[in-house]
Image (cartoon, rainbow, N blue to C red; front, side):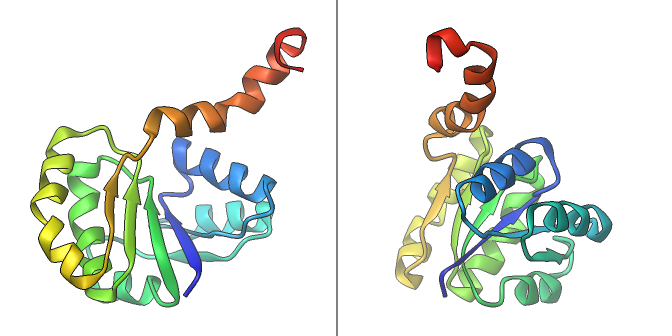
Length: 149
């Protein structure tokens, strides 16, 4: 398994991440609950699309087939992290998100021993500031070519 899945790919941050990844020649699987929106974005970027809601455990499990890592971009994370983390732990899939919600940090920290025992990394908001800077840099560079060109 080497595929990464971006869940919430059609939201603001998810779309930025998807565009950035595709622009660098990466091929994440794009996913979210709205099949039409996910399919349109995936078609535009030439990527695979999957759609499933986080209220359906079997659908989440099926959506994670062949995936090694999930990047959860779908907020509010207080509602989306738990079902995705449950599915990731069950499937042995690493979990990363872009949250800034303290309750999510605490909830994932409380599951650290379980995750380690399953060989799964749970990483809420790693280098969030750096990620935002990296994703937004092309825009800021274009706006200020004399400084960043």
